[in-house]
Image 1 (cartoon, rainbow, N blue to C red):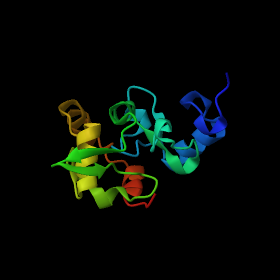
Image 2 (cartoon, rainbow, N blue to C red):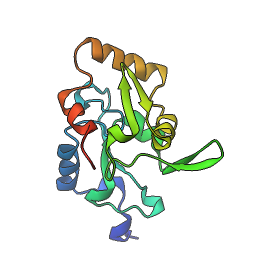
Image 3 (cartoon, helix red, strand yellow):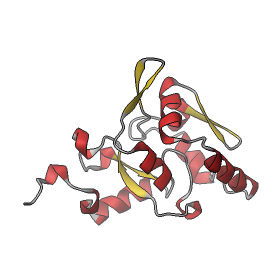
Image 4 (cartoon, one colour):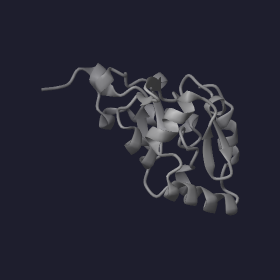
Length: 154
């Protein structure tokens, strides 16, 4: 049985759309700002709002994510912080620097959305902070493209 086109699986994202998402993201994870070339695994095209929550497989709902951010986020769109529902950062409609700031290798929150996203995606897990420290020392993080992405709206 064939699935309706509005419920396409990740494998069915057309190549032209994959390339458009990668180009728009400048080959960076739109959550942690890691460069594709600095990742161990290939980056993923992530549904910001997951397919199971009726998120469409369209450019306005897709972003580029490293394997760690993508795996950690899963189909989550929000979490609970101090008893309150808080949605996660949406790179399609928000500016990264409105919710996060880099403090050396740490990604710190500027908002409740930033706090929720850091927690759910594990952005400051020790191995990730260590990797960013090494990249900073090598002069690769944040990259010039990451500095652009940090201040770009959607």
